[in-house]
Image 1 (cartoon, one colour):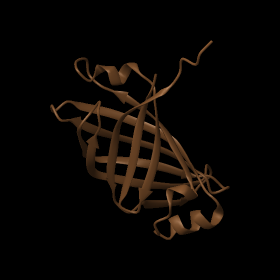
Image 2 (tube, rainbow, N blue to C red):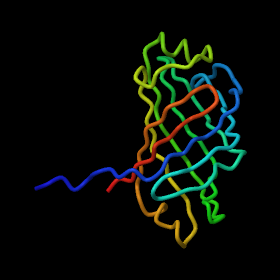
Image 3 (tube, helix red, strand yellow):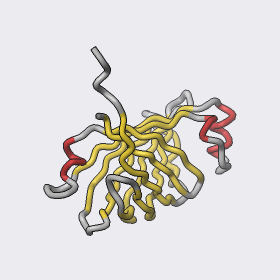
Length: 153
């Protein structure tokens, strides 16, 4: 039987971010809130902008890996607001995590950063986003996160 599951590139989100708000260590891990301040959406299936006001609620585990959970809105080029919850995992060797924590740029080849965005879109031309599963590859700098979103086919 041939494989029936595949990936199709849908669009890229470039989310601009502010410096993290560091909540420090807690019972569940080290919490940081990273404000999302704007950005763009561009690709064959969707174009638009990232609406300022969302955030990524990062929880760094004791082993240094981070669980990410971003809540934000994009506005399609036709004005339609689309809500996103994007959960994922960031892992890297200790020396790379130290560089990231120091605000230094690191090569995407030095870390693993994948997410599974879930979209809540109204009925209409963007309703397909609510009816599909997606995975994404994420890369970041201290000022921006780039999320390449793929539809699971």
